[in-house]
Image 1: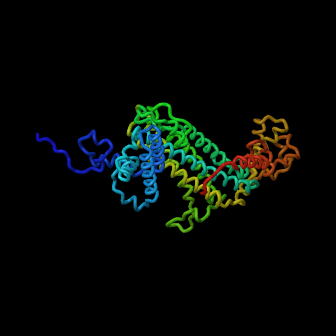
Image 2 (image 1 turned 90 degrees about the vertical axis):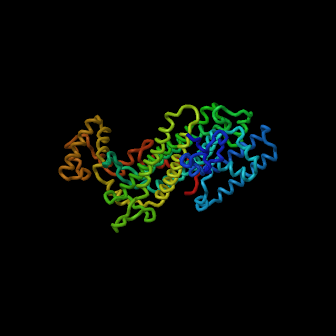
Amino acid sequence: MPKKKKSTNKSQWESAAWEGRFKEAADPDAAVFTTSFTFDRVLFPYDIQGSIAHTEGLARAGLLSETEKKTLIKGLKEIALEMEQETPADLAKHPLLDEDIHMHIERRLVEKVGDVGGKLHTGRSRNDQVALDLRLFLRAETARTLDLITALQKSIVLRAENEIETFLPGYTHLQRAQPVSLAHHLLAYYEMLERDRGRFQDSLKRLDQLPLGAGALAGNSFGLDRKANATALGFSGVTANSLDTVCDRDAVTEYLSAASMLMMHLSRWSEDWILWASAEFGYLELPDRLSTGSSMMPQKKNPDLLELIRGKTGRVYGSLISILTMMKGLPLSYNRDLQEDKEPLFDTVTTIQGALRIMKRLTDEVHFRKDHMTEAASDGLLLATDLADYLVTKGLPFRQAHKVVGLIVFKSIDDKSPFETWTLTTFQSFCPLFENDLFERLSLKGAIEKKSGIGGTSLKSIKAEIRKINKRLKSSKHVPS
């Protein structure tokens, strides 16, 4: 059999960083399959930031002269400026020359400064380089996400302050249950977001360890001062185990987990408002500019933004499951599977931040139909629990009071006679414990005001809660929506 000739076709990866080990360039299909440059380009500011810190660390260790250090840093800053100024049209014209953003920056650096650019990778692997870039990215995006959550919380509180005396039915099983203040309902969303904020905030603690210096898996051989690099990049410490460091994606998983919880809360909120915008509820009207119409039915006004938030929740869940599934079988330490962490993460960041911005705009601009809410909240049946509570205050055990009021409700419905219109004598025919003070309780506002404990829907409780929240939010920053 004749000896197979070496391929003379130039591959995109002919000058790959590992070319010395191989006789053949990468197959073009394999090259395209393995590239991540099309999506990990978003990491370039963090890769530049980490590379500058690494350059300074190499100089401290005596591995670069002062002139070489300045040359490398100048080149890196020029590359950052170039990439910041690239337009989508520029990106579309890019030939696919590099496997990922890290090799792209290194190639461009060598083109700019010559062979000294090849010194940048001393004591560093792409494994710890990527781990650093991801932490820097997550630190910035977590802070941005926290600001957006806080901005939405502030919008909720502003609307709640104006709706304390707007009443509507509260629901269980999607059935009218008891009257509540609209402010109380809005502040329920605030509390969901507060827990979300806590989860994102807490994740920053575990992000605060520098991975740079772990090398490919065993550390570096040049005595680089990892603590000095940590200080330069704003980390409080360094990771403790190089094997764990290069394959740790807990921070990505935590962000996706917190994002999934956040989207679950936004989806529940969206479902409420989708229902409220329907003719069957009629509790709110969405602004025209935040609604859509029908291509066929001229009368339609659809809550598409809310529906998309609800729908995109499944997309974020999918990203979390993708990462968990990818990670579950990986042996120590680094494996190429880990390249699959980026697209789910980047997509989730874009999705949840977009959802937070949209929800803030809807909260700012939605019009509540107070007349419809008040009419629904005035249904006397919503006061049934208050009737039972009244009998308890007269000494009747709750279970017996529940039965008595159940009989009252049955007769009221059967006779089509609202019990709030009954005389005292009629009530006493069911239980002699009813007295004239009953009618003070048998009103919408009376029922609301009785829920005066911490966390209740009384006007006093809500005002106290808003004061606490405003005090907490005064120290919080947020980005414009």
